[in-house]
Amino acid sequence: MQHNVTQTECKRCGKCCSAGGPALHVEDRDLVVEGKLEPGDLVTFRQGEPAYDPVTKRVIILESELIKVRGRAKVGACKYYLPEGNACSIYAHRPLECRVLKCWNTRELEEILMKRLLSRGQLIPPHSTLWELIVEHDRLFDMRKLTGMFLVEKDGKLTQLQGFLRELEEKEGSFRSRVVADFGIDSAAMDFFFGRPVIEVLTPLLNR
Image (cartoon, rainbow, N blue to C red; front, side):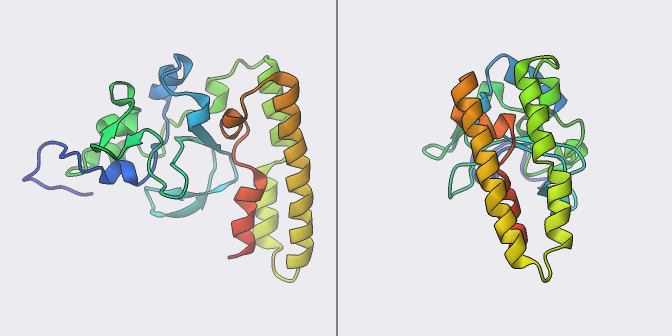
């Protein structure tokens, strides 16, 4: 825990926002439902994916899904961070982690990290066509099985796994294209509704 007794307020240095977007918690549900946080600005890390755990400070396999605000390409800063002036474009409607974060005393933030995480099931009606598509995608591209396969079977099977990954990329690409074409879902929101593409998740596991 970081604790600086000489600092009592944010200096707007931008360091926290430059580190990436926050994870969303149950308390943030209304921000998404009311459109304060848009689907195209969010990304889902699905159950079974490797992800960085800010509590243990290591990469773990997620036991439950995690929705985050996107980072900006290449630089990784939070999507809503405005580097000119070190400001936040949604400050009045910022997520819980941002509201409780005090870089000079991180106790309150540490108490909520990786707890009461928001999920797609808490945002999307369970009997909707969209939810049925999400369930179908999770069945076809089950990250719990795929991650385990790529972690356990990599030794001696690199060529086979590379070929399998290319097949997965083509199959999932077709699924996503069909959803965009047939149901009119914004392509920018695909990573929220269906998580990161499997090629993006699994390729780093081949290079470990």
